[in-house]
Length: 112
Image 1 (cartoon, rainbow, N blue to C red):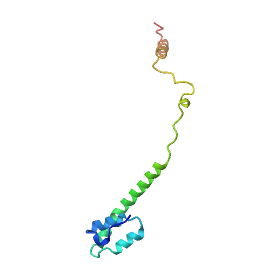
Image 2 (cartoon, rainbow, N blue to C red):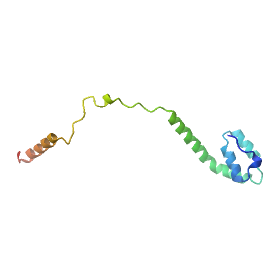
Image 3 (cartoon, one colour):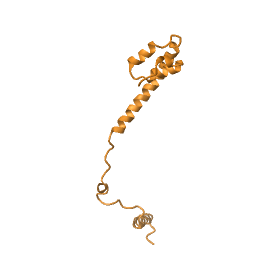
Image 4 (cartoon, rainbow, N blue to C red):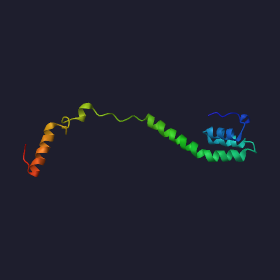
């Protein structure tokens, strides 16, 4: 990324932003060498406090780009889902009546 000319940076915060925007270490060092001496301590403080956040964001973006390049797994075939037919419905009247008959027989009331 190209940064602005160091002579056009107007504040320590803008200078720190320009340093953080550089991806190459040698270019960041070059910018820090050309930092005005009265700003240097403040610029270093800004860079030291913000660099872990910038690095974490770059790692996050790289991980998301990698996930975007991966191909999702193929969906299962429609005919492979139900090989033996659909499962029996529990709400069928025959199932409920059979369960009630078992319960009535268990308590001794008989069928009616």
